[in-house]
Structures are given as C-alpha cells and as structure tokens.
Image (cartoon, rainbow, N blue to C red; front, side):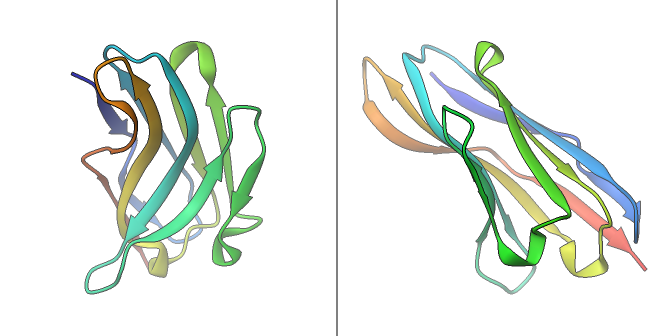
Length: 120
C-alpha cells in the first residue's frame, strides 16, 4: 500500500510563512511529477505548484513569487515553502504525485490534505 502524508499546515497571520511537506511511502517503483493543490471552501481544487523529477517547476499565477516548491527524490518528499500569506490563501492543501508501483502501474495519488488558515 502506498500513501502520501502531508504535514506543516496550521494557523498563521497574514504576511506569515509556512512550509508544507509531503512524503510518499510504500512499495513505490518510481515517482514522476509531484505537486500541491488547494481547495478553499466552496471552490474547486486548483493547482498551486508542480515539480518534475528533474526539478522543473510551474506555479499558479496567484502564487508566483510567494511560494517555492522543491523535492528530495532520495526521501520521496516534496515541499512547499509559502510566504507573504494572505487570508485568501486559506484552504486545504493537497499533495499529489504520479506514482508507479508493480501492482498498479502508474497512477495519480493524493494525500489526505492539510489545513492552512491565514488570519487577517
């Protein structure tokens, strides 16, 4: 069984910073792209940032300049450093990864989500 486990969410004041982590575990043969999405209450899930195995990253326009995505391939972990947070960044943040296993082949995997709340 494979899983993605997020950590690092919480309550922060506007202008503050948070660092999210997501570790993949289980019988994983390889991991392709990894990323972070978020879903605010009453809204659709949207991309925050995504990073390839080689380290190429792309960001949502609303987050450019305020977030940095990185990954440690040896640890099967992806990070999201967020700064200058705004109340509108309040959402559940989900980790996503394209995993390959011997049993299931390649598939999209999601973490359980971590709440980020930015107070004004």
